[in-house]
Amino acid sequence: MPSTSSVNSERPAIGAPSRPPRVVVAGATGRLGGAFSRFALDQGWELHGAIVRPSSRALGRSLAELGIGASHVTTSSSERLEETLVGADMYVGAAPVEAERSLLPRVAAHGVPAVLAATGWTPDDVPWLEEIGRRIPFVLESNYSLGAEWLHRLLRDGPTLPAGFDVSVVEAHRIGKRDRPSGTSLALAAAAQDRIRGGRPTLEPVEAPTTVPIASIRGGELPGIHEIWIAGNHELLRVEHIVLDRTAFAWGMFQTAGALWQRLPNLAPGRYHPADLTVAGSP
Ligand SMILES: NC(=O)c1ccc[n+]([C@@H]2O[C@H](COP(=O)([O-])OP(=O)(O)OC[C@H]3O[C@@H](n4cnc5c(N)ncnc54)[C@H](OP(=O)(O)O)[C@@H]3O)[C@@H](O)[C@H]2O)c1
Image (cartoon, rainbow, N blue to C red; front, side, top):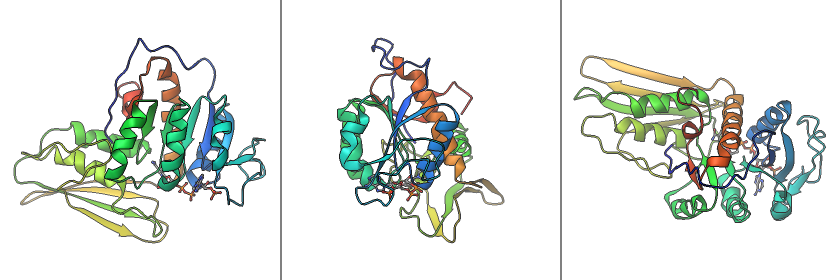
């Protein structure tokens, strides 16, 4: 969960935080995108567009028809992204990573700021994501839940561990989750590694390999568990984060999108971490 951020007060205003943003949501019919869209509509945001696959059964149907609030926005094919973006203030990516590899460069070409949730990025994605960061401000975060964010900060900013303590990460998710280990566990492991005496910093634009061991479990409909094991010779410290409901991700993502919108007038292009955008101490 690193950032390549900088705030540039000389950048001309491109947002108008006195009104809610007009957002285009890719994956609005999915679990995360649907929950995000409901929060956005509840808070008076305008859903400007909803992107799905060209072959989607939801194509051309209104969000109201699909049970996502009372919005009359009809879903558009990803092939028509460019025209959907006209007049939009922000792009919210809640589609899988394979889709975002095609969508995000086109969003950046239109100069629309973005908040992305996809997981499963690889080191091959780093160079072009850096290029995106030269064009637009964007947030790419593998776990938008507020608790995971706090845990990450605890590991990143906490004191160095006593010598001889070993850190491991245990993560458990639903059986169908494709990326393994989870992006969150890689980011937590990288943050924890910095706390080990003699550890080296490993934070990279996309979650980097780490020497902290990660055990991955997949089963049932588990929504997401991350546990940090810190083992000494005669003692064990465990810190655990459990997502009780996937709404936690959508709520954190909505908070981040709101913070990005508020900060936009003074934000230079770059990749931001949610913590870069919020007031210190409030996730
Ligand atoms: N960062 C976080 O906190 C966080 C939290 C939860 C999930 N995620 C990640 O977010 C992504 C979505 O998760 P989910 O659970 O919401 O998945 P999901 O329920 O399967 O929803 C995926 C959505 O993407 C759409 N989609 C699929 N392919 C597309 C394409 N080529 N172009 C445009 N839209 C496309 C689908 O629409 P159609 O099928 O109708 O086309 C659907 O609306 C995954 O990568 C997941 O790992 C991240």
